[in-house]
Length: 510
Figure 1: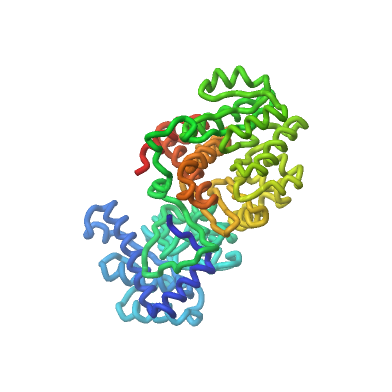
Figure 2: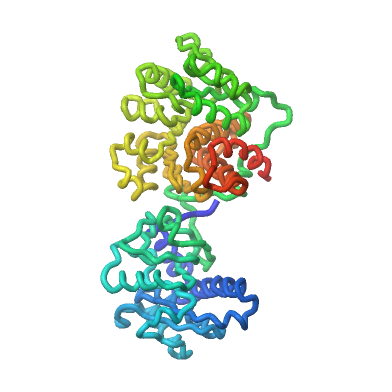
């Protein structure tokens, strides 16, 4: 796992490196410049092949008066001394420079690095943006807005230093206007604003460069993203097991004529390794489900005795896919959510299960850390009473507030899905692709989350906290989507493609 930081935490870590560890600020600035210059030269070498050839490039570094500008001036000096035709331009008053930036300006002047005062944009093949750092908190206006607009309009290859200017470092929101980079070299840690859209889109390819700033142990209020190696946390399948060993999933889903969601969820649970799956649904769905998925059992009885038998049988429940919000659907969801809570069984609450929860707030009494809710933005709006715009501007905070307020694990689904638990842990999913924005993808996710919960039934002592468990499921879902995209492309991807790819994704775990 790699840590993701807010602007506030990045400033704290930066100060800790300077004032506690004793690393001078100028040293950190020089390291940042070296790493960025290295990435720029790698790009040139890839295009031209030799260092002599890439000296044909003409580079302009656009600098602000803050420390981000100081990084930029140092980058200009390093490239210039490598023989690359490089100049820098300082926006705003030189009298307002920070001490570190003023020092970099003095050094660059001593080495004869050219300073441009009237930019002819068409001359440059590469533009480096070092205007604003992660501390920008207000919309870009006036001359700075015009400057970023001109930078974006050029045909040059574009590089952002730490974060594209105009992107909110925490939310990824565009603050009036933002620089559109092809490459962003960010320092020490990935910032939240480089995870959420549109900031992630404006950043282009993102490189996280080690400049000597490291995190400190902090058990709470941490944010991470998962990588392929983290799937190694999933336990191996025991060689002596049977179908009961690997978990039994009860899927309470599907109103009359709506069996597709139930099928996708149940099929994903089986593809994810669950040993047995039973679907509790309407009688009208029995035959199509038995044809579509003969590996699953189907029950249509809804009586106290039948429900109790199904609840006692299962290890994990999924409630909601295609369930509908009729009176009968409400009774089904209410019975299983309430009694699963009393039996202390894990529940994945999805789709219409969430819509019913929003309609019946008293059901919140049955939420706990054993319940994982999986709302998309519209469902989260109904659960919280906030507008979709309000949620999108505060994805991490919204998920965290819901999790700490209800004790449930919150999987807030979007292009960058956020997983939050009651302990203040956040996981941002950086895998996946636009092809996954297709009908049924959420139903597949709920089945995968149930399958992951089943994986730890035999090794409960090694089970991660519920938030990480959900994050692993989200990551598996996204990796299946990425593998499907490699085969089919993103335009015509279907939810079933994710299910088809899931076993091969699991097979690659080491």
